Image (tube, rainbow, N blue to C red; front, side):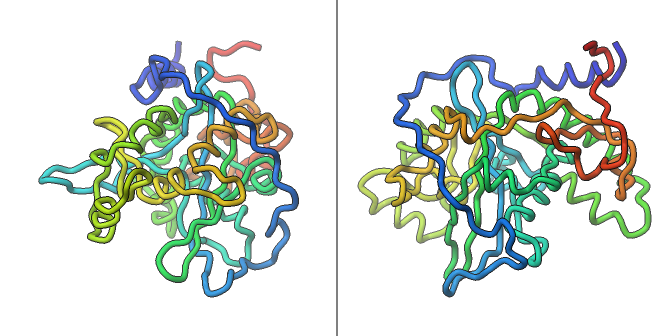
Amino acid sequence: MDNLEQTIQSNSMEHNLPTQEPPEMTYGPTIPDVGERRYTSAPTIPDVGERRYTGVGTLIITTMNGQPYLVLGREAFKSIKHRGAYMVSIFEEFGGGIQRRRATLADNACFELREETSNLLDLTECSEILENKGRHFDLPFRDDRIYRLYIINIPDAHTIIPYLQVNRQIITRALNNPAKGTKSKIKTYLEMDTIKLVSLAAIQRAMIDINNYVCFKAEDTIWNLNAADAPYRGILKVDSDTFLNERLVQFLGGLFTDEQQRGWEICRDIAISSANKLELAKPVKIQDNYYKFLIGTFTFAPVGYLPSSNPDQEVVNELPGEKE
């Protein structure tokens, strides 16, 4: 067994993969597909009334042992001090600010997904999949902004996680001796240091207890004190090692009038809907790329698509120690 295979096997045994089944959830009816999608061919990102799209992200749903999980990432430098101690496990979907306003919202979501997974997930050549296979929701924030959240179901997403640290090690080596003008770009591929599966059932249980919310804004504290019951506001404590960021909590607890469901219920239904599943091909080992620091990393792309970082190279389907 070589070093790479040992690393992948070791990573798969980390605590970020669930080791026991959560309590069963009660499933409601599956939400049908939404019809035509917006922005699939728009040359620019439009404004909506007085609001402007300033952020976009992708929330991945998967199942293990027949139960739904959210696939979430933790940013290495996003820690929050609470009661004199640092809470470093703030988990969130894969998203960020708009990178290119001349690209579509789905394009921008794919840029963020690729960077925040350290090149693990590359949908940049097929961003329309997010529109056709996934679902999206617009989350207003502040007085004049909107965050577009895409949701997609990736079966067996847990098999991707062990490759994260392999990719980070390769990219980190490049950071120690970066090519001219690439240092800041390399850092964008190292923002997330952990990917973890978080049980949707555990999130649902945590959301109903006001004591699981950590508020840093006075208006959130006041809201919670005046609320008769959930949804509450703030950072959500799921367990001692897992806190969800406010934006994700806003979505999971939000009531969406078109569906008459909370965000967590929508996630539950997407997990069991075959219409929203995105099948990934076997990983590709990058042989050449415009960004040289990505050479040697592993990338998963949807079945039938080559990753953008390896368009002219042979797909390497067989991993060390793996036989067809």
